[in-house]
Length: 390
Image (cartoon, one colour):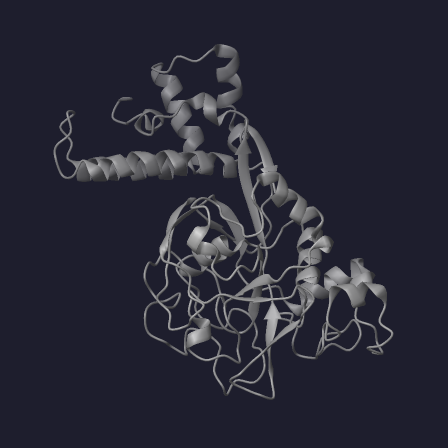
């Protein structure tokens, strides 16, 4: 106890030293892991009173207060100052000076705008879908990461090609005489609806479509991000829900996602309500590329911790992101599109496509091809107290 306050470091079995010179995001990752472990132990103990006289329900409230305090930079600084004033925490003076400096608890890494933080933890990969492509239901653990709140828009993609002209769309098409960059990295329908480097009038805030996996990877690399893994995509899409067909629940609701046989064209991002994590358009509007190789029965045999199809080690993951142009295997698509009906926008549905394709043929509308777009991810991993960004 510190006066009338608890020492939240001790509540979560952490030390102040662990927080020294760490970014806000790294601190959050440390706290979420500690909170998860302590809270799990509290749940297992049931409602029995603790030795200190508190009920388990009171203790769980304290655990949540500890988490909320230590992940907030201002509250963290104040809490450390309170501990220092009470002189109950023995810390080497030279270390304490660094730890207690307010600037040490400020953000040292700038998280890109319009990204949503997804906390580390387990989630249920469900098979509650009528499709034969449903995965096996089981739990998967995913490290903390960030993901774009919206799919990448035409405006954002135009900024990319202005800096990277090799990814521009030629003003005149000749499928038999494509530049080598296009022959290797897309099917000829790249940016199909654009006029050269210009997207259609009135479509600035619409998702960019007819983008190959290679192009999506190139954009993500330019933006300092990467594509989400399939497991990350599903964790983010579910928004904390378990056993539900859709990101909002178990019943199809056309007011929650843009899809169906009558819609015909894309819609601007953010026109439909977000899921519980704050993500918009995670199903419907456009299919979204993921980082993984498409393996039909992948989740039946995959690792239960940060699985990535086609990748077995962290080094291989880094190589995939750095040398994506060498990839030739099919890649994962998730989320359905505007042309699809109830089944293809179910969260459990997974599909695959060659990385140079820019669309998916829709059996529901023989005259249309379903749009392919993407959103990016950005993550943090701790390795020997060194911060790695992918």
